[in-house]
Length: 133
Image 1 (cartoon, rainbow, N blue to C red):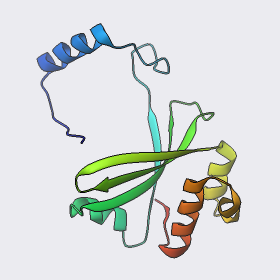
Image 2 (image 1 turned 90 degrees about the vertical axis):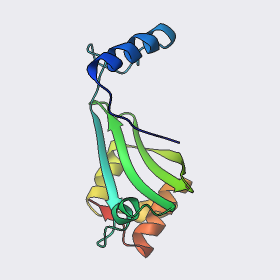
Image 3 (image 1 turned 180 degrees about the vertical axis):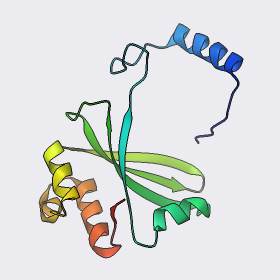
Image 4 (image 1 turned 120 degrees about the vertical axis):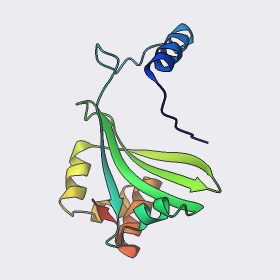
């Protein structure tokens, strides 16, 4: 389960101090400890993924392409799934060229990519009309 809370600056400092005592910094983060997350989300013309989320539909999923910072050597296609309040994520690697092809509408290669998640997204792009937002 993922539960999010807004905390005040004093609590943030306390949490950060405690976490630093037991965890290593992310090696991909910049000098200030942060990095930019870039995501491209898929949905259909009826905003099915968005509406399912807003409506609290118990069983839902969403696809996205994500990478961190400026590093396009590590791009992932991700599917986030919620089932009865519990969530999990499945991912598959994508190259920058493959992302460009998806953006350009060249999707036929996905059906024969040999990666289950890429094939599943292709199938849902054909049957549910998923597209990049």
